[in-house]
Length: 208
Picture 1 (tube, one colour):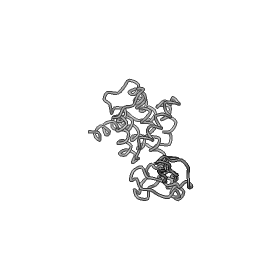
Picture 2: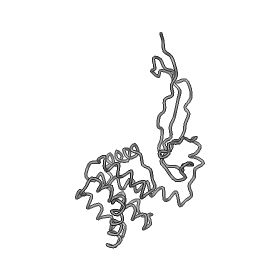
Picture 3: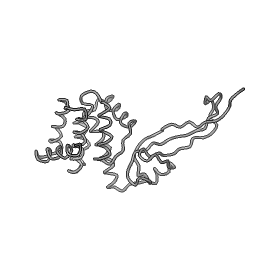
Picture 4: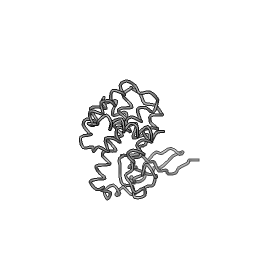
Protein backbone atom coordinates (compact mmCIF):
# COMPACT_ATOMS: atom_id res chain seq x y z
CA UNK A 1 0.00 0.00 0.00
CA UNK A 2 1.37 3.40 -1.02
CA UNK A 3 1.03 6.24 1.50
CA UNK A 4 0.63 9.62 -0.23
CA UNK A 5 -0.18 12.88 1.51
CA UNK A 6 0.83 16.50 1.94
CA UNK A 7 2.67 18.50 4.57
CA UNK A 8 3.80 22.09 5.02
CA UNK A 9 7.50 22.83 5.45
CA UNK A 10 8.40 26.15 7.04
CA UNK A 11 11.75 27.90 6.97
CA UNK A 12 13.07 31.16 8.44
CA UNK A 13 14.07 33.55 5.66
CA UNK A 14 15.01 36.67 7.62
CA UNK A 15 15.16 38.14 11.12
CA UNK A 16 14.98 41.68 12.43
CA UNK A 17 12.99 44.05 14.63
CA UNK A 18 9.51 45.47 14.19
CA UNK A 19 6.73 47.10 16.17
CA UNK A 20 4.59 44.14 17.15
CA UNK A 21 0.88 45.13 17.01
CA UNK A 22 0.13 42.81 19.95
CA UNK A 23 3.08 43.69 22.19
CA UNK A 24 2.89 47.39 21.36
CA UNK A 25 6.69 47.74 21.50
CA UNK A 26 9.66 46.85 19.33
CA UNK A 27 10.35 43.12 19.30
CA UNK A 28 12.43 40.71 17.30
CA UNK A 29 10.72 38.91 14.43
CA UNK A 30 11.27 36.05 12.02
CA UNK A 31 10.10 36.18 8.43
CA UNK A 32 8.93 32.64 7.74
CA UNK A 33 8.12 30.94 4.45
CA UNK A 34 5.72 27.98 4.36
CA UNK A 35 5.17 25.72 1.34
CA UNK A 36 3.04 22.58 0.87
CA UNK A 37 4.81 19.43 -0.31
CA UNK A 38 3.54 16.10 -1.63
CA UNK A 39 4.74 13.28 0.62
CA UNK A 40 5.46 9.68 -0.23
CA UNK A 41 5.64 7.43 2.81
CA UNK A 42 5.64 10.63 4.89
CA UNK A 43 8.75 11.94 3.10
CA UNK A 44 8.36 15.32 1.31
CA UNK A 45 9.13 14.81 -2.37
CA UNK A 46 7.50 17.45 -4.62
CA UNK A 47 6.37 21.02 -3.85
CA UNK A 48 2.70 21.45 -4.78
CA UNK A 49 2.12 25.11 -4.04
CA UNK A 50 3.69 28.54 -3.76
CA UNK A 51 5.45 29.96 -0.72
CA UNK A 52 3.30 31.72 1.83
CA UNK A 53 5.15 34.29 3.94
CA UNK A 54 4.31 35.42 7.43
CA UNK A 55 5.99 37.33 10.24
CA UNK A 56 6.23 35.77 13.70
CA UNK A 57 6.97 37.84 16.80
CA UNK A 58 9.79 36.34 18.88
CA UNK A 59 8.12 37.49 22.10
CA UNK A 60 4.39 36.76 21.86
CA UNK A 61 4.74 34.18 19.02
CA UNK A 62 1.74 35.62 17.17
CA UNK A 63 1.82 35.54 13.38
CA UNK A 64 1.24 38.49 11.07
CA UNK A 65 1.02 39.02 7.33
CA UNK A 66 4.42 40.08 6.01
CA UNK A 67 2.92 43.42 4.97
CA UNK A 68 3.20 44.41 8.65
CA UNK A 69 6.88 45.12 7.97
CA UNK A 70 6.02 47.68 5.28
CA UNK A 71 3.30 49.36 7.32
CA UNK A 72 5.33 49.40 10.50
CA UNK A 73 7.47 52.54 10.37
CA UNK A 74 8.59 53.66 13.83
CA UNK A 75 8.99 57.37 14.49
CA UNK A 76 12.54 58.78 14.37
CA UNK A 77 12.96 58.69 18.15
CA UNK A 78 11.92 55.05 18.35
CA UNK A 79 14.06 54.16 15.34
CA UNK A 80 17.07 55.72 17.05
CA UNK A 81 16.34 53.82 20.28
CA UNK A 82 15.93 50.55 18.37
CA UNK A 83 19.26 51.10 16.67
CA UNK A 84 20.91 51.77 20.03
CA UNK A 85 19.42 48.58 21.49
CA UNK A 86 20.78 46.49 18.60
CA UNK A 87 24.21 48.05 19.04
CA UNK A 88 24.18 47.58 22.83
CA UNK A 89 23.40 43.87 22.44
CA UNK A 90 26.34 43.46 20.06
CA UNK A 91 28.64 45.44 22.36
CA UNK A 92 27.74 43.25 25.33
CA UNK A 93 28.32 40.11 23.27
CA UNK A 94 31.76 41.36 22.21
CA UNK A 95 32.77 41.97 25.83
CA UNK A 96 31.58 38.47 26.76
CA UNK A 97 33.63 36.99 23.90
CA UNK A 98 36.80 38.81 24.93
CA UNK A 99 37.87 35.79 26.99
CA UNK A 100 37.43 33.52 23.96
CA UNK A 101 34.30 31.67 25.02
CA UNK A 102 30.63 32.00 25.89
CA UNK A 103 28.70 29.92 28.41
CA UNK A 104 25.05 29.07 29.01
CA UNK A 105 25.05 31.46 31.99
CA UNK A 106 26.28 34.28 29.77
CA UNK A 107 23.68 33.53 27.09
CA UNK A 108 20.89 33.59 29.68
CA UNK A 109 22.32 36.78 31.18
CA UNK A 110 22.42 38.48 27.77
CA UNK A 111 18.77 37.63 27.21
CA UNK A 112 17.70 38.94 30.64
CA UNK A 113 19.85 42.05 30.34
CA UNK A 114 18.54 42.84 26.87
CA UNK A 115 14.96 42.64 28.06
CA UNK A 116 15.56 44.76 31.18
CA UNK A 117 18.01 47.45 30.06
CA UNK A 118 17.09 47.73 26.38
CA UNK A 119 13.49 46.39 26.23
CA UNK A 120 14.76 44.06 23.55
CA UNK A 121 13.90 40.38 23.26
CA UNK A 122 16.90 38.47 21.92
CA UNK A 123 16.54 34.85 20.83
CA UNK A 124 19.29 32.27 21.01
CA UNK A 125 19.48 32.10 17.21
CA UNK A 126 20.10 35.84 16.99
CA UNK A 127 22.79 35.66 19.68
CA UNK A 128 24.38 32.79 17.79
CA UNK A 129 24.56 34.84 14.60
CA UNK A 130 26.05 37.83 16.43
CA UNK A 131 28.62 35.56 18.06
CA UNK A 132 29.55 33.87 14.80
CA UNK A 133 29.89 37.17 12.95
CA UNK A 134 32.05 38.66 15.71
CA UNK A 135 34.38 35.67 15.77
CA UNK A 136 34.68 35.37 12.01
CA UNK A 137 35.42 39.05 11.51
CA UNK A 138 37.53 39.38 14.68
CA UNK A 139 35.65 42.47 15.82
CA UNK A 140 37.06 44.05 18.98
CA UNK A 141 34.66 45.43 21.55
CA UNK A 142 36.42 48.76 22.14
CA UNK A 143 36.70 49.51 18.41
CA UNK A 144 33.05 48.63 17.84
CA UNK A 145 31.81 50.78 20.72
CA UNK A 146 34.02 53.67 19.63
CA UNK A 147 32.36 53.56 16.21
CA UNK A 148 28.71 53.17 17.20
CA UNK A 149 28.50 55.15 20.46
CA UNK A 150 29.07 58.60 18.96
CA UNK A 151 25.32 59.14 18.67
CA UNK A 152 24.46 57.65 22.06
CA UNK A 153 23.28 60.02 24.75
CA UNK A 154 24.48 59.87 28.34
CA UNK A 155 21.62 57.68 29.51
CA UNK A 156 22.16 55.21 26.67
CA UNK A 157 25.88 55.02 27.41
CA UNK A 158 25.10 54.24 31.03
CA UNK A 159 22.68 51.45 30.06
CA UNK A 160 25.19 50.03 27.58
CA UNK A 161 27.94 49.97 30.22
CA UNK A 162 25.64 48.29 32.72
CA UNK A 163 24.68 45.61 30.22
CA UNK A 164 28.28 44.95 29.20
CA UNK A 165 29.37 44.64 32.83
CA UNK A 166 26.58 42.29 33.89
CA UNK A 167 26.92 40.06 30.82
CA UNK A 168 30.69 39.73 31.25
CA UNK A 169 30.37 38.96 34.98
CA UNK A 170 27.62 36.35 34.59
CA UNK A 171 30.13 33.53 35.11
CA UNK A 172 31.93 35.10 38.06
CA UNK A 173 35.18 37.09 38.17
CA UNK A 174 35.99 39.06 35.03
CA UNK A 175 38.78 37.99 32.73
CA UNK A 176 41.67 40.53 32.55
CA UNK A 177 40.78 41.28 28.91
CA UNK A 178 37.19 42.03 29.92
CA UNK A 179 38.36 44.26 32.77
CA UNK A 180 40.53 46.21 30.35
CA UNK A 181 37.62 46.71 27.94
CA UNK A 182 35.25 47.89 30.66
CA UNK A 183 37.88 50.28 31.99
CA UNK A 184 38.29 51.65 28.45
CA UNK A 185 34.56 52.42 28.37
CA UNK A 186 34.99 55.21 30.90
CA UNK A 187 37.26 57.03 28.46
CA UNK A 188 35.11 56.27 25.41
CA UNK A 189 31.94 57.46 27.15
CA UNK A 190 33.67 60.47 28.73
CA UNK A 191 32.39 59.44 32.17
CA UNK A 192 33.69 60.95 35.39
CA UNK A 193 34.75 58.49 38.07
CA UNK A 194 31.45 59.13 39.87
CA UNK A 195 29.37 58.53 36.73
CA UNK A 196 31.27 55.37 35.85
CA UNK A 197 31.12 53.80 39.30
CA UNK A 198 27.51 54.96 39.77
CA UNK A 199 26.42 53.09 36.64
CA UNK A 200 28.18 49.91 37.79
CA UNK A 201 26.63 50.17 41.25
CA UNK A 202 23.15 50.54 39.76
CA UNK A 203 23.75 47.43 37.65
CA UNK A 204 24.81 45.46 40.71
CA UNK A 205 21.71 46.61 42.61
CA UNK A 206 19.47 45.34 39.79
CA UNK A 207 21.30 42.01 39.63
CA UNK A 208 20.98 41.48 43.36
